[in-house]
Length: 97
Image (tube, rainbow, N blue to C red; front, side, top):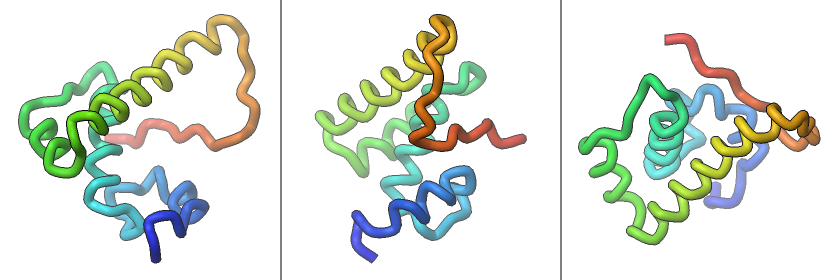
C-alpha cells in the first residue's frame, strides 16, 4: 500500500490509530502530537517533541503545529458563532482512558 492509498480505511480507523496497522510510525507520532496539543490535560513534553523531530523537518513541524492550532481554533470559534458542520467528516470523540 502506498502512502496515498487506504485513505478511507484510515479515516475509519482514526479512533483506533494507536492499535491500527494502517498508520505509519510518522502518522502515529503526528496523531499523538495533535492529541497532546488539543487536550488541555496533556502537554507536549521533550520526549514526544524528540520523536516528532525524528520524523519531520523543522518546516514540517511548524506546518503541522499550525494546522493543529487552526483546527483547535475552529473547534471553539465555529460552535460559538453557530457555524454548522458541513458533513465532510466524522468528528471523533476523545477515547476513554
